[in-house]
Length: 486
Image (cartoon, rainbow, N blue to C red):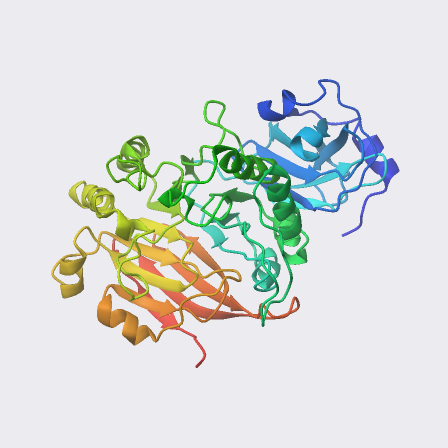
């Protein structure tokens, strides 16, 4: 791909019709008359929150100036000649010199290219695409991952995911890890910093983005994000003890700066929402961290909180998409690793789980799928409101859960047969490997593939681990295993 010259970009910046808006959180902190200033784009480029007509564009300007700006140019071609949008976007120390703009007026299901320009040079050219119309029946191809601990290995899975043909990429939490440490045997990289304030959380995001694979993934594919605990503090919602309010705020603020997502004006850190992709699938992003209650706070136990639970139930019942895909952080299946209940996951909130799965069953909501992170294992399970009866085979599953393996974080290594002895609803288990997951959905099937990668080498390879075919209406899977003997 040819990199456009600065002269070409300046000329292009004078053309094109567009609608662009700087997020309110940025506009209130920065100059209302931004100008293009000097600086370098060493943290990559990214896009997120695509709709049929709009996308959020992101980068970061390395500069010593208190306040500055950069020009965003969006085009239909990689040479940046067919320009459709331009905007001068402000930045400054108040937002860690990150750049964010929402560009509208785009065409559905269309590929776009983009570049950021400063007075010192230009960023790499990025590629993204808008979503298809809500009534489209075109198949969708989506990938997801979670738990990318910097010290534990190279983000090789991202390098290979970047090369895939995708409509969307999903990050399911633990994008950063708040704790640093002295190097341990087997560590690929070093991170000694503990994140406790805004500056140190910002450092964690900048450190993660030094990985070439992660930069390339963001450069080529639009993304959606949910946050888990390590973006603030491990298991912080157990309140033992709770993080200080300023620390929690700092973690979420840094995430809002570094992640290209739309911010809810009334609740800046709200994650849960509906994302209708097309007639084949609708995503339901949920938040199993921020709204928890009942852990050392004297309130009734709930993993979602009553407001979010009511929203989720109503959203599932009203969805007209064929596949209802719940994008979340924590395993919903009981004892998913065959090692007893995981009290930090849905196991620790059985009333909420029974309510959610019971309502899916009572209302006959078909084709509900959970995409899950956090557990650091590749696993696939059927789920139902009564797991005892499900294990006996006397009730029909109400949904399927796909737990994607971690990018680098170590998992619990156990023989699959041992897991299934305790948890017979588990269809597959592997705690040895790391990687990402990719699936396609169409009117007939959801086909999920687990890919595992060599994370000890930034040039390591990736191979197919498992393939699951889930026919519409089945709530179960046909498994093909490609796992090597370990």
